Length: 68
Image (cartoon, rainbow, N blue to C red):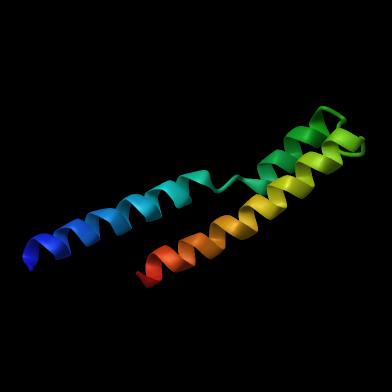
């Protein structure tokens, strides 16, 4: 029984760590794109949109990992 608990704790920790490390720094990306004058280009808008979607998904996964 204790081995199952330790295995589950380790799995939960690995899940939490993986999700936490995958969260992008959205404001940092915005600043980098602005400094490179790419923020108003199609590529810049695409990068910002995808970073926002990635952050939303990652925070949902973090909430799930914490709930486990």
